Length: 499
Image (cartoon, rainbow, N blue to C red; front, side, top):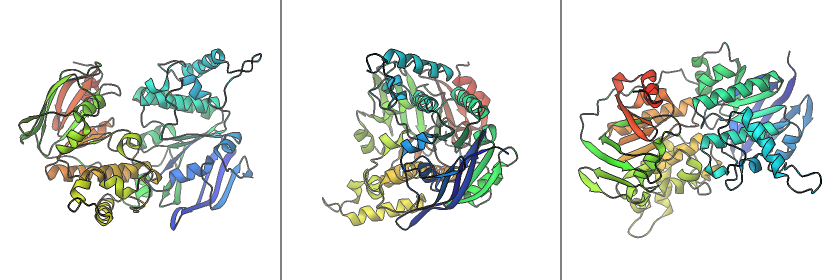
């Protein structure tokens, strides 16, 4: 029997009248990777925040190496050997990679007692080399991609002397190659006797890397499974309380419908993409696929007006239009759900009702006046439709779980009645139950005539939902694949530069 490094004993937590955790128990053993699964709002983030010292529990005990401990701050958690890599990146953009890694643990020169940058860069580069990072310790953090910043977060954790490592959605922004590297590091740590709590909504990762799985549902620990013997259907049923169903398929034909949007010769001033040409049909889901860094997101940000473009002609319903800013796009009923919902898709300190209504105030006002009653009614309608949990229009959006924040961002554009919806990684960080709801909603919108451009790194998602798939490689559209001809092998072939 492996030593128990961390024991969670009947922990409960409530916010106002909302019980988030109800008598949850769990053990993390030495030399195991323990998955924590559950739908958004199940209580995973709250439990991890209690373990890592960001939140106080209302009831229960935490035992570290068999001894009961009070963890009141993240610093105390680190001193007890518990380190968390957050889902939302904790990077200071203006600092170098080394300064971020050693923040609070700077190396001082033995003689001058000032920060010994030379030594810090050397030590940081050693850690990065172990991660096979393609950047060095002197790089400024704001110049890194999301995936590279994730590796910096992991490097920060590796610097600490920990016994329990919490990885909250660490793979959400990583490429397949980078995920393989991460899993190799996790297996090395496991062999060294570390305990790892791993959170991921990608069930295939759970089967590949984990030893045991604890499932939370509605704040309760439902069951502990052996990851090597449990089935996908059993996990989904435990998480959702309903039977497992296969991913829905888009079986409609949209290519013969009228063209609602045409893009010709779209290019960026920095060379990220060039000569982009495509059409979008009414009621179509057009998938954009490609490797991370291929230019998919940059194309859509320029189209939407969030980034500058060097050239390009955009035609909407047969008429040439000019889009210089997101304000122009909104006027033309073109909406954009960004990949980074926290910094680009919402204002975290606003209440849910205002985040949802912010794009449609002009529709909700009476004359020149805007009344809270209409904003509240509008928010209630879409929060119920999207099953946002907790269903509280007055709660600040940054207090919701990641998946429920994504639902609020989506509700914002549903409220605006957009004709064209650009969705960049629409289900990133969303559990399997909520994904199914988003997929059905996308198909319902398409049936009503809404045209959707979907960027996704999840190939099953692209293959199932898209009427057509455009594959992007190094800033150019290199292939167009129809739904009935698309396979994972074919999409990956083109995404990696194949002819």
